[in-house]
Length: 107
Image (cartoon, rainbow, N blue to C red; front, side, top):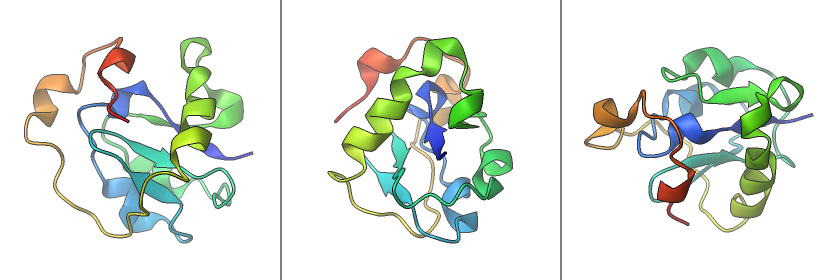
């Protein structure tokens, strides 16, 4: 089982998780990160690093976040790998607590 980046990451894109990933399984899109399920080794290091609690083990996904398993698998091959921490999006603080952001995901 892989880990999954969920809706909380949209429009925030903190990359603290990228720094601790031993296998470089994160991919970067315009306003969201995803985890490549083929590369993730399920080490759990990234979970604690996310300041908005956007990363879950697949088996622990909240019911309303299950669709993000498919979204991560779909977008990982399309987006470039990110291997170093970068600044979060400029208005990340405004979006950190916002719910229902899926319609804002830029593919």
